[in-house]
Amino acid sequence: MPDLLRVCALYPDLLNIYADRGNLLLLERRCAWRGIGFELSASGLGDDLDPDAHDLFYIGGGQDRDQRLCAQDLVEHKREGLAAAAARGAAVLAVCGGYQLLGASYELDAEVIPGTGLLDARTVRGSGERLTGNVAIEVDLPGTDGPRILAGFENHAGRTLLGPSATPLGRVVRGHGNDGASGVEGVILGNVVGTYLHGPLLPKNAWFADWLVQRALGLDAPLDPLDDALEDAAHAGALEAAGL
Ligand code: GLN
Image 1 (cartoon, rainbow, N blue to C red):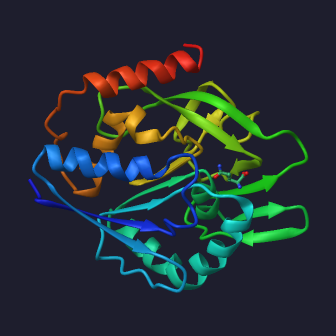
Image 2 (cartoon, rainbow, N blue to C red):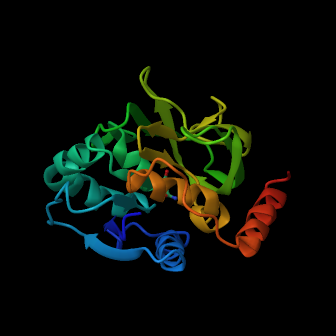
């Protein structure tokens, strides 16, 4: 069992809405409870990104104006490092605004905010209403026992359209998902996951956090179980909120 999980949060001071920090806190706690060390670094504007220095990269959600600031920087300073990290199996979790920036672009009318192109997707902010509310999706993650439900909350104006090589993270059971029409949510590519689920996502779906850590550490077997009575109750509450 590796004794350290090295996490890098991208732009934690700019991309952090909807309690996305809770996702990082949960990772730290679950590592501590298992005796795994936890190292958290931040990579902000102007910082380059060392692809070998971290096991898991986290990008949270943000307002359009903060995304603009980060997008240019992401492309200039971090795109290659992030792609190299993903190629060697590091995990990447990108939520909402962060997810949008992993695609090819985020288009706001005539303005095109560049993305990393790591995922075969593009996002368009249409004139329709924001896609907001509790959401539940069915996912069947590699190496797991079969389909399970991820529950969370979404609030986005952008509609994410998947290209032909993109695999959705899941099927929408309740809520809007990528674009409110396709019936799919998020993208998964190896150990890279982009999703609209805030929530915060990981405290409401602790098993998913464990899956990410397992993948980030390159472990074949799932992590030892913990007493998840509180986390299971949070998951049940999130499902109820989504009308399930
Ligand atoms: N600004 C983006 C949108 O509205 C992302 C919002 C978010 O991260 N919640 O689509």
